[in-house]
Image 1 (cartoon, rainbow, N blue to C red):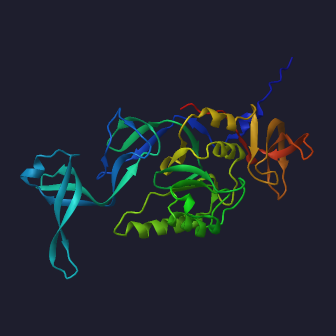
Image 2 (image 1 turned 180 degrees about the horizontal axis):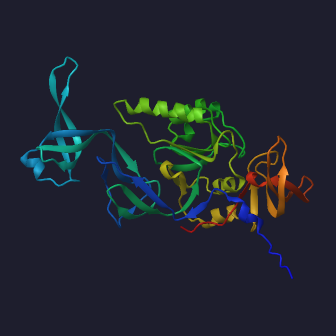
Length: 356
């Protein structure tokens, strides 16, 4: 007697962008950087946690009695470094920040020095779990949304909705100074003109559904020019929730962002996270979906949510592509249930919330 084993179709569907309660944030430390917190210390939203240097270099200086008393890893200020002037003459310039790397047997002490201090602020309330030579770990409070693309520096502000719908595009003419200091939800995408205007009026960060790679390159060039300026630029970051291109904000994440409008929030681009402060309960209710729910991420039914009811097997799809599919039950135009066939590669599973 043969026994047929039923396969769960959701096993073949990739998970969607996740929600996490109490995420762990990791901030990298470079050699000249100086942590401003210690393990076990509570931190508040916007609190300085790292002194980072924009310009960093390795230096070799003669070992002196003052230097030999320092151990590798110790910090030192006001190290005189000889540098050539414009006329070719030798001049003394003070490296305001340095850290000892090693005392060589050749009588040379090697340092990691930096100039152009930038203060990194915490994007969330939380507790410092560890301060290590290469990073700081902070267990944040609140609800975190993971994005596909992150760029910039950690930033904080109130959450504000600038788009009318998750697939709408925000033009530069719609942005004004009332958005200053806000983390702006901008719908499907922003062009470089709108991003430049947002940064000029003091927007702390941008949340979009998608971002064009050429716009990121232009942002990187603009950042490099500002880094070369005398004064450090204000913190600014960007998160693209769905990835590259013109993509809508996923509907379940849009519901979370609408429910969180006006709350204090922060972004951590290195971890591609948006952290929303306050009680996560109402936000989780806004994101709740029936068990087994999936979302169509591309094609004619893009951003439609439904439930997988079975596997369709290998098929040839429009355009000549060949691959497995699945039957998905969605809501029809008349309000009834409709069954459609979608490639498995065009689905993502709206999974449960990670409790950190």
